[in-house]
Image (cartoon, rainbow, N blue to C red):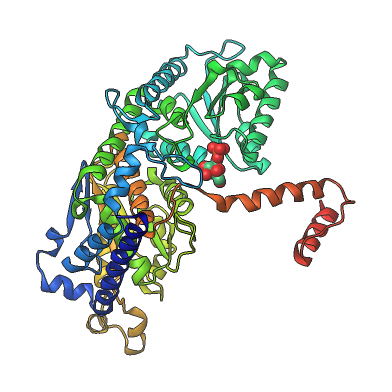
Length: 546
Ligand code: F6P
């Protein structure tokens, strides 16, 4: 069959699958979760799935078995299986940058083989991991000393985007497993406040900077790293101190050397690892120093377990596929604009921010892989806060507002900090929220509580607000790895169905270039401003007031 025919068949099959779902949606939108549960007493046992240590209950979604079958049909029509295989094979799926997206290679065991241009890349991955492990142990055990001979007490990760959110999220998530005589800090923002508030409290002779940047040219990171270097050299009185207090993580050895960090203090990764997919690479160095190599390897094994599940499980039982398809269901049929990620665990406080970059930088796109403009919605807005804090702020809107906000509830059966009845209270709220969202409270039930007639309407909860529940025994490095890979592959599934490139991010470029030009205009009063009237007068006002 010619390429042309294959492409036409693909489009025809995909469009039939979309249409079938659209007609199905027109019936489903009138159903209520109350009725779906009443009609099938086993629904809560039926619409569940398992992978590794993660249990997913997706029964509180506005779906039937037919919905799932149609969604899986859509995935098949969009060649999801073939696209998964292409990613794991190392095909050039990031077409605009002409690269594979091989973060899954970072998690493969040492004996695995994955060839890129005829060369097995797995030994290189493990060689870097071994160097990271050796270095981490030196810092953890106090063998690595600062310039004046003192042991390192502070590790400061300097990076932004994937070179920050991964490290900070993982450190916070696994803080319980971290070595407590080391303190970890993160500087990302170009706002000098971020730098001052971290560095102002540290002794330079006990501080190690880990400069993380895939490109080693990102303005924020380079500016913060230069300031850190100046601060260190000024305090220590010698350029020679840099070698003992700076290491780099990058794909760009030359730029690292130019900055003044020697090659033996650089930990390498590769252009086939996207920034937001890089935590399992050397970008995880600060995490490894915090939790130790064994725990870091357990994190990788967790990722790998979910990778294997995604790679091999049938679509209908595949956790990331199910999550991805449900996101499509609400985003493209119900018109939901957002998705709330709600971890009921304080350690996961940066998890929603991490998932936000993962999903929105990957799938916030308007053209397909072949460059045509889409005529359907792509990524929803991901957002969230840890429970129960969210309940006392934005949950009002989720329960009674006019917008549909599908929710992912993430909870753990065991607390890492058992304290009286705290954990049962936390989890009582966890279960109560998804139950209330789904089933609500009718006017009749409100009246039966004795609420005055004129107040009944305000007390009604419409319910039928969908959610997923992810329930895990305990937050460990391995279960964190599984959760992260679960979301990565859900994002992949969505991108595959929208037929977009989830691995580039051209949308961040325009503002970067414009900022360079404006920066020059802020340095001197004379350049004539040639922006629009709004930008011109804002810059003028700033120049006068600075
Ligand atoms: O914001 C764009 C971006 O390229 C992200 O994709 C990336 O995570 C971040 O900047 C940092 O890039 P780098 O690691 O090259 O400094």
